[in-house]
Length: 173
Image 1: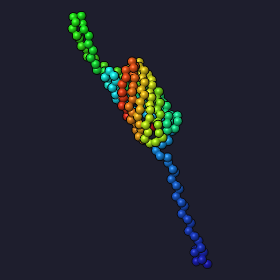
Image 2 (image 1 turned 30 degrees about the horizontal axis):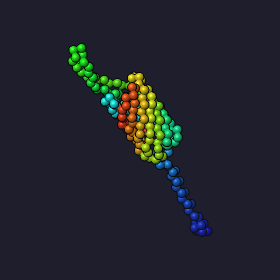
Image 3 (image 1 turned 45 degrees about the vertical axis):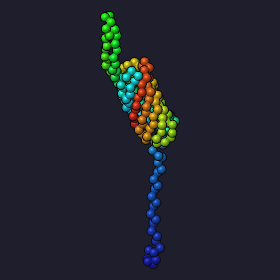
Image 4 (image 1 turned 30 degrees about the vertical axis):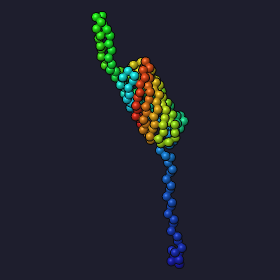
């Protein structure tokens, strides 16, 4: 009887492993709050060297496509130029100027991603005011992101609306 009982007991089946949760591809659906930090360098029409750092914090208003935020930064403009004039003796007097402006830009930041992909081109706009130099700032740009890295070329108008070009490298988190 015992032998028959042991033979009729079936072993318990092993539990099936739980399936791993399906994760969406990284960065294909960007939502929620985001921060952008970027470093830039450029040159304006009057040969001023420009460089600095910008940080913005905002929200993906339309998931994966439209970002709106506010930001601040630290910018440095270095001017080197010569100017001249004729004095009362009709002699030409040349002056050399070497100036550095440091300013704190405060700006609104809009970015529109054109594709819902890991690598996407985007258009970007920063508009605001530069504290320390009392200048308005307007910076439209075109770029692309790869994963969390961004690369941008922008046209900038600062203060007296002297045009310049910037190259910017950034990171989103």
